[in-house]
Figure 1: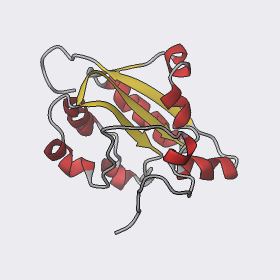
Figure 2 (figure 1 turned 120 degrees about the vertical axis):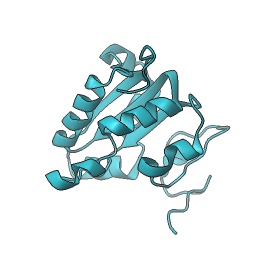
Figure 3 (figure 1 turned 45 degrees about the vertical axis):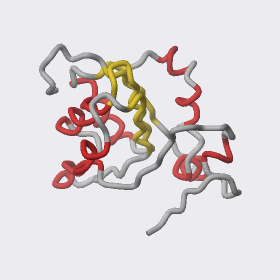
Figure 4 (figure 1 turned 30 degrees about the vertical axis):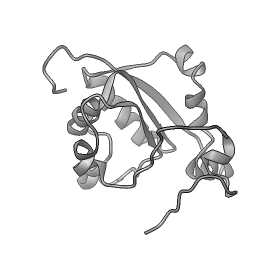
Length: 158
């Protein structure tokens, strides 16, 4: 077990950074690569966040990366048309991998920088997680992008 989530209390979690009366919010720690369609209906989600995922540096384990061509079809299934997919990494190679996969997928289009700048969640992903704070403490770099789910015109694949 681990990770206690909880509402309120100190500890510097996201709730401590941006207090708000949220409704209908859940956090689930599971293997999305295997189980995502079992938890969400088609088009149920309006936003998805991939924050500082494991880079899996070795080529033989790249298939374990959370953003891959086959998985983008799964994410597109659960993310409603018009929904947003947020990603951030402190590993440039992984960021470029994710951007390349998303750019090649007909079900997602990159959100323009001006729209990201106006999105409070875009700024929040840069500072409101333990991993983000760790990168800041180590004076590291962060690379982020946001993609919008679009209607792929029928095929359902990428």
